[in-house]
Amino acid sequence: MIPVGFEYAKAKSVKDALNALALGDCKLVAGGHSLLPMMKFRLAQPAKLVDIGGLEELKGIEAKGRGVRIGAGTTYRGLLDSALIKEKYPLIIEATNGIGDTQVRNRGTIGGGLAHADPASDMPAVMLALGATMNLRSKTGKRSVEAKDFFQSAFVTAMRDDELLYDIVLPAPPKKAGMAYVSFEQKASGYAIAAAAAVVTKSRKTITAVTLTLTGVGERSYIAEVPDVVGTHGEDGELDAALSAVADSQIVNSDIHATAEYRAHLARVAAKRAIQAALGRAG
Image 1: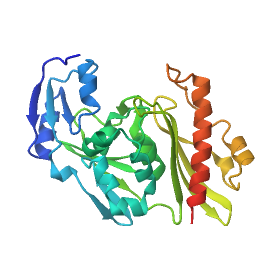
Image 2: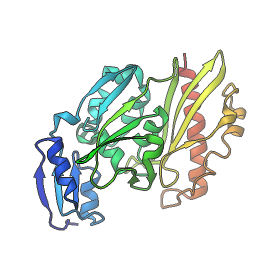
Image 3: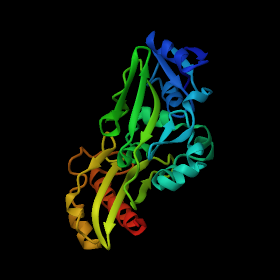
Image 4: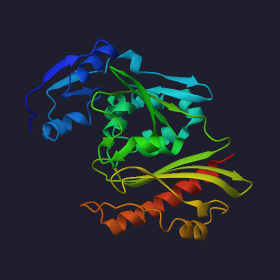
């Protein structure tokens, strides 16, 4: 399909983009892999499109304290090429390798994907697992929103219409933590039918802490409460019991790719495999 008519402008600065947002009925575009298909199907019909893909201020990865700051305009390729990300957050690398294809990874941005908040996308679950903070800007000010409060529903975030996602700040990962991402993907689109991200610490062979997040299951990525995993050795029977209700807090999606029952089953399997892989990588 063809989108309805719209104005197009290329932002010369972040201030320029924020001024455009303040006027209303405006959308920002960087890689365009999420917004443009929606416009073609007329699910989104902004009067004006402002291109922020060339703004260097929104790009880059750098150390921030013991953590890391990622500019929202950083491409997935930028994440994959970052030695800092590889060293501190291998979970990001593992998930990013499965996003789209080479062209999508070269052009798509982490900020665009997070702001789009597709309920089956990979990066929201990763940001939740790592305890990220989203820094937002508008013409009138700045504010920060933790990842656990940022993703609200399908394609809905805590961002206001006049706000731009400026950067993402990650805290230092837990000492000697193991991380893993496991996804059951819809083959044509690459989006998750169900996927899990896990960050695990251990003492000897016993799990001492775990953060588990899931995506593709319901209307948004979410943190799964799995207290019974702590204290186990990550054996099959232990995890099967501890993860039996991992999707029970959600209204599980049912569609042409999977029934709700099957999707919940995949969520349990992905969660178990992610925890076991992360446990094996923990120091």
